Image 1 (cartoon, rainbow, N blue to C red):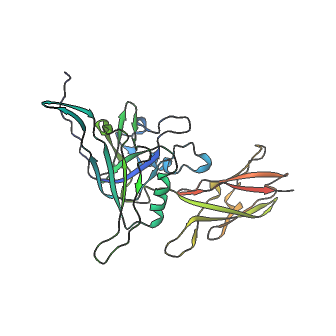
Image 2 (cartoon, one colour):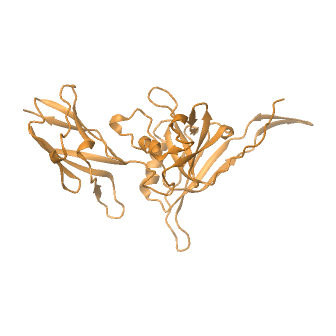
Image 3 (tube, rainbow, N blue to C red):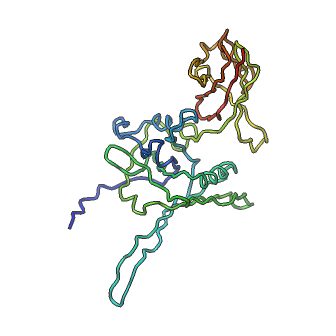
Length: 307
């Protein structure tokens, strides 16, 4: 018989957000957070923010994304499967464990994106961020490992609207892949951020770029968010992209370019940028345009220059 040991206690408050990620990266290694990232026993918010800003052009399937704030988070256990015969009883299977939570007054696009996650064929896992700024996962030696969702169990309810007496409560549910995965639960304090702040925790917005007016001396780039703003019906422009946040990489690897200085990159109007630099593009080449602007994930874009 093993020793139970003394209870150290795990004092955490209610979950306020999840961080969702693919279970494995492209090398089939489980996505996880190194305990060595801790500073004085706490995880700096910048470690998570670097993982939030994993762009398509650099993605190795290790992206993590924070959900909007949630409420009424629950774990629900089914009854174990038992076999009985007169006085004899035997537990045949542990109970399954389901997770459920509510998004309050959430924009329809969030639910639509969640529904897309349910059918994209990628195995997913998640961390929990509590209202007292702690990150919950499974302790695995030198790493904090996320809890795994059971494949094909993610369910997204239909969008609701508020009534005269009750706000819209949109329900998300899924099943844990291992019902006992919380037995190894571990909570790490997060430093430097607030779980209630969308500036500290985010999932990137998708965007597109249209390249025009290409010459040897530059081009014009129009960058807009993919989703329409539900309040205006418009595709909002992406503003504030810096010259250090764009690169044009020759597909043949012979002529990778980036603006040399801030004066070579100008936002002439909201979301419209001009790259103006003498003889920056040469030869008959096709370039992959890559943006690295925080909270924005710009779809693959090409620039073709014909001399």
